[in-house]
Image 1 (cartoon, rainbow, N blue to C red):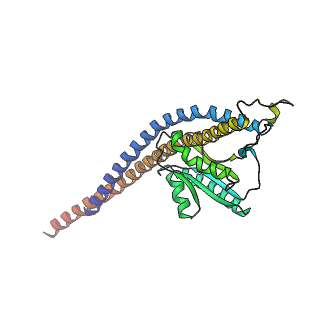
Image 2: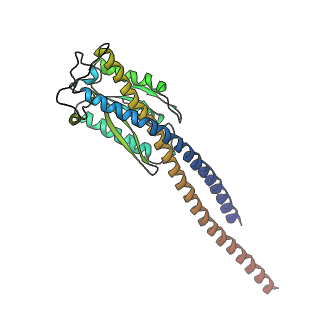
Image 3: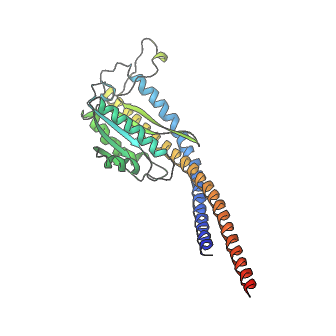
Length: 286
């Protein structure tokens, strides 16, 4: 019965694992609902300010802000937002694959790359690949706040102002639904023009107190809003992916328990049959 005892031990171990994955699935489902609420609250502001900033490319202020000026790209800056923890399926794999594709394309064009890693998984990958990391932030938790991101983002913006970076992109996961998330690579700077058809033939903004002061403030808010939106969307994606991964793990554990139970029953039946045969054989010998 040594084999049967070993199988019983395996069944007990898998059942304990199943309890853990089931609990993690329920926790992720609860956190996902709250993360979705924060994501939905962040989206309208981020989309509206993106449209307003896109219109600025068609304006003619006395002051041309550096964030609005196209220039030859020698160095590409990438802000990548990943998770701090694993156990969320292929979420980080797809995100980091999209990031590496953007890096390889930039290198093929002869551009240098600087990385801003938000999240432990992205930081670990680019450290291992020995890419220059200009800034990083980790352990933002399930409720990322703008002040946690400002310092990291400012490093990249200062590098853009000084000419160390000529183009800045943001890579993060986009929440489609609880079963589907995708990685997105979006250009932050220079600001891309949008909505030309919505504007009148002759128009412009009136700036008070000055175009330089107004543009500097609103463009900073624009970048912060896009990065914050990426961070909260990434949390929603993480919780959804973890919920699905843990459900799959729980289901697989259930199937494994059924298979092990069948093997245990067969081993137990074989042991009983062997004992009966030995008893019958002994009786016949007497």
